[in-house]
Length: 140
Image (cartoon, rainbow, N blue to C red):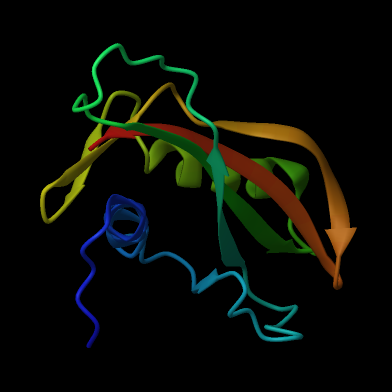
């Protein structure tokens, strides 16, 4: 097993570690998603989007800030009602309480605000896709 020594890898492992605590549906981490994971049971696809932190530092030895969005696609079968589907996406959002901290080794990642179910649902591979966004930051 490769040892993770940089903040970028540790941030991912802190986020993934918390997502792995979700046990209600299978989780796939992009790009490791099967072509057709299934159409009869809900599942989740997780991708990590890194943003450019806008913090300016005066001293060269100041810690760096990292920001990003964990995009969580909640894939729900077409036979579920809208209330059931949005409810499931909302439970995924609730899995990430605002201001919560998630750690890996010496890196701490904080959820910046309450995650939300965003945008309109759409059909993707025979499933309804609901998007949840988790905004995070870390300093290291």
